[in-house]
Length: 432
Image (spheres, rainbow, N blue to C red):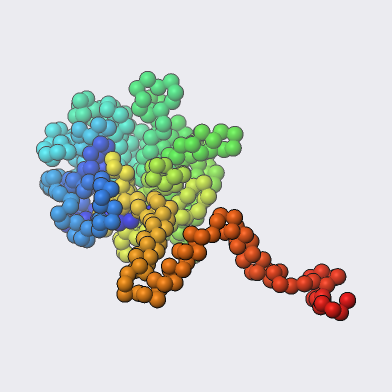
């Protein structure tokens, strides 16, 4: 399904990545506190270059340009997020600072201090832009802050609201689709995971429900529309990656417990952790499928309809995959360790084997061309006889010849059966 287009080496371990919604821009946050913005190579390939070598050197130089790079935080950069229209980029680090800056220049426009927890600095874990007016900030203490955004800037030094959906750090945030009555078109409810529980929080009413203890760490989430119970297929489900290599499925609205499970890493004693997940666009996957980043450095493509792992890709041999996403051109971007990889839909798989058929046809054409050459006279004579016989035969003759060949293959053409049929008794002429 996917082939590795290029590999981008980084100067330090990757902690987070963010993809621009409408441009091929990639932002990465590193363990050193640096934030770097790259412009990815164009995905468009002309039809004349179908047979060209599109592979890129593993260092990625010459195809991926660095737009800017800066030391954004004193500690590590924990999380990044683009605004809905891509006009702003937000970062948060272990220095307890949240910064807003330009994605094209990297220049800081505003910043605030992250609220502490019981007089102790509270490091951030996640940023998510819910709407042009609301930014979600999750922290190690389990606190979930709602920050006011006006014109894309941090308008106030303190959060508008703070909720505590989990007792442990918040590991994922996924918005639920807006209701049919929504006038803004933006979600007002979201799912979060933390520790061993899943929770649903409303923008106005706070935490609505918290699941039962799953006795397994919940690490990542993705909402999949168009799936659900038999009587309500359009309900939607939430796929949740766990620390034991199992992908659990939850029906929207039934938040008490999971409804189904897909074993992604079936190792004894519990598999590798499923650290990140993203739905594959349906025009690429042709079905309900997700890509899962695993703790062993692999990527697993999971078919949710069949409840099985379809294919395994390799991002790194040692380091876990910590970030996954699809850019505006439909390419999958995986990050982990000190590398970022760009994956593109394989043209061979897209054509469904048609390229192999074309190559076989081309080979046969080449053979015919060689047969007609003066150097291969014996073959030329045989080929001339074949062509003459084909030209002289009518379509009816071809059909009759085909039928005779079929009879010979079945062993019935020259065999005379006795009175008992095909039971080993033959009829001999003159002995009746």
